[in-house]
Image (cartoon, rainbow, N blue to C red):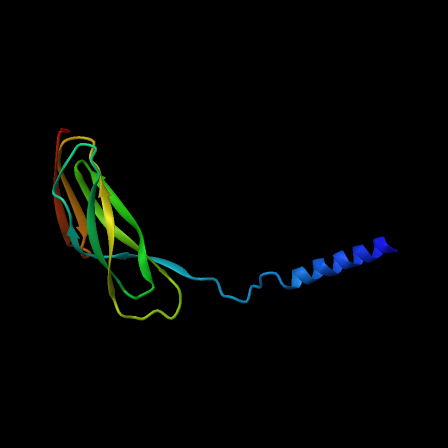
Length: 136
């Protein structure tokens, strides 16, 4: 008899736990990614081979739900074209555009002149030229 009571108690607890589990009442967060245009780039213009340089990139998002997602790069020889991809997540976002900042890390493995072209509009770029010299 005691064994049956324990099994019934276990079954009741199992069923009760099932009713209190996570519900699916919340709507899933919609995440959208978009290209954002760069407004300013600051940082060093010279460096050494294998030295990591950090540039500060300012970009505009269309509302307060926008955050940095990643850099999208296209490299041809010593020239990189760089776009900022922003992520928009959440609801009830204020429609006022905001300027955000994120670091861009650059490291060259050979000496030379490198041209970084950050997308400012569909046809314009902010160009940062970096001269890399041999290691000391």
